[in-house]
Image (cartoon, helix red, strand yellow):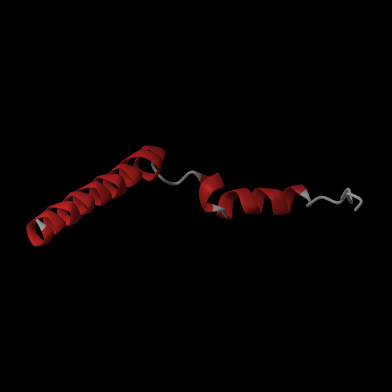
Amino acid sequence: MRLQIVKEQADEETFQEWREEDYMNKMNFNPLVMFVVIPTVVQAGCLIFMGGAMLLNTAIFV
């Protein structure tokens, strides 16, 4: 299988338009919240639910 090299590219206007419209490229958000706070909250929630499941299993089966 041969690798096809594409030599076409978008013009500068299309490129700038894409940079302004794309959510990640525009950086119109707080990276700390998106990449640190949200995963931390999800992980803490999973840990709490895991502990609750272990407590429930202990109460039912022991």
